[in-house]
Image 1: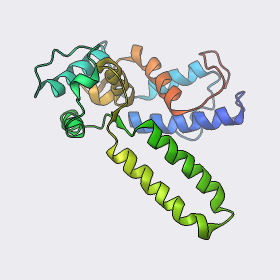
Image 2: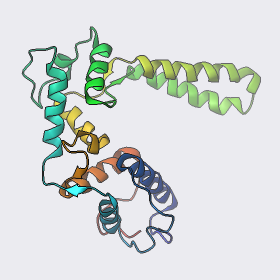
Image 3: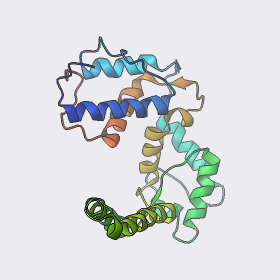
Length: 218
């Protein structure tokens, strides 16, 4: 994508996004793969054509919902629907254990739990301060820097705050992050869905400042 008409920050974000796409869809782009690509729409089409899966016109969101519902319903009599609050599905008592059980059933992490925002925000601010100060005085701020790193690890490792509000919100995130894994037949894809999935991924994984449309020049 040399000669991109986006600014350098946007270009770097899209490069990072392409690496995420490679990991999620098990594909690899050659260094000159996008030399003929002129617009963002052409980039999306190129990526979709690169994914070596058979097109099957079935709804991945629906498949993900029923897979998640099966994982949730085993120990509960709740009538699960997309609007069901996750607070009912994962009550605070035993929340981490229940999330782990669901992840084991699904076969992948669902990134459902996070630390309390007050804790995580305080630690990130502390890390920023320590990172700046450590260049001025390593001996004084080296230990606080390490303590903050450990604190962040513990906070995210043992957080119990729900990231999403409803089952439907969680299903949406699962489809975005684990598209091929939740397909009933993992060697298939629905080409009609993939453009929106790719747009979701770039929205969540970058800070591209340009408003990307299919006609945006690259």
